[in-house]
Length: 147
Image 1 (tube, one colour):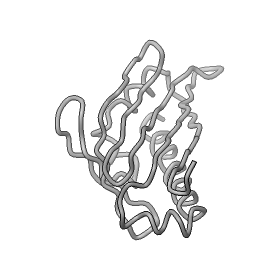
Image 2: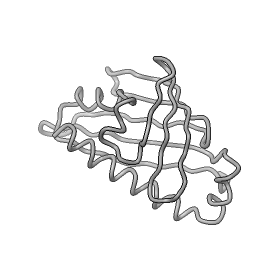
Image 3: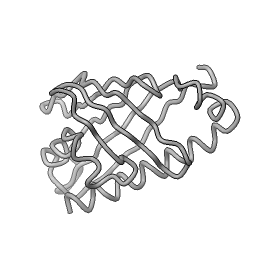
Image 4: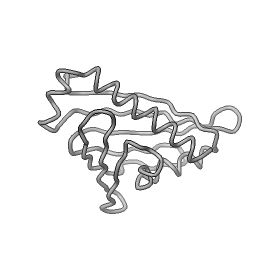
């Protein structure tokens, strides 16, 4: 894997039924309501949209998202990503013991935007910390939404 490729994993837990968690994660256009770093989602069609993301670093990402998988019976959501990053992001929703649910997140991307590559090469730890902050905020927002 090159220094401009990144793989991220996270696990989110919520005190809500798996179906509610899946529905919230499938409604990408609603992410800005509960995920502070997703500052905008423009729906292009039922399968495509553009997300604008900004976390702690003073740079915004523009990502073209294309729905690749939405299978509630298996709990799998996956989007292909193009734009400033290229790759995919996926959630797998599973029941947790008791009444809650868990979403396992996996993202694999390479930095495609020329203006972002230098940061990926010089400060990969900073980019990872930025992503971790974003994911923690997303989990907190989702817990509030579904709590």
